[in-house]
Length: 198
Image 1 (cartoon, one colour):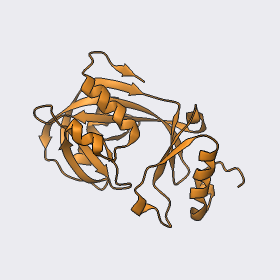
Image 2 (image 1 turned 135 degrees about the horizontal axis):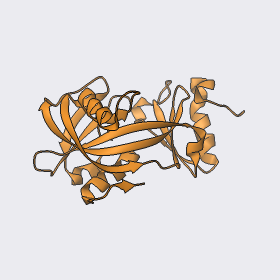
Image 3 (image 1 turned 90 degrees about the vertical axis):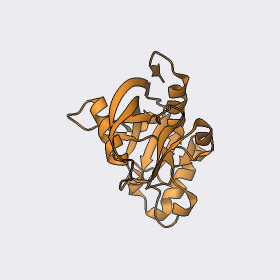
Image 4 (image 1 turned 60 degrees about the horizontal axis):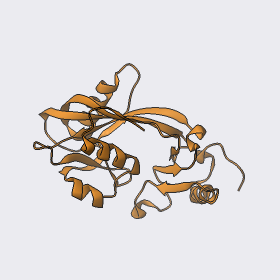
């Protein structure tokens, strides 16, 4: 297959072949979609893992929130509409807003909860992960993970979420959770005073 600059340069029926070719080069490719979504359409995105693979993309600053249940024994997770996988509520920071404003906005948009953003749990910027979208965009994610406390609103769904619920750490282990969010949750549960930088 000839080299391509963007996944969108390929016809839909060749995109899977492109991802397979990437894996043959020694990069682990993890599809961010469920099997029932793999048909004529391409997946919403894939996570590519490989040494310094992030240099093939642009930087994307995002925020996510660990929202605890009333007793701190559960954590709020959402199930994504685009790929059926579980994740922490969050998303991209927009120009003109702070990281905490972005975090609060994303939680509200995805869950209907207004939150007070608190402690920064961790900063995650591994150059060894790259998100590749079906439209050809590729990003190395710089993620800020915060604790957040609900202050108003009612838990609900959005056009981005198909399910939202509080789950225990034991339940989280069995869910199809986006890989990069597992470390955020583990770091939150470690209850370290200082911020994790990974």
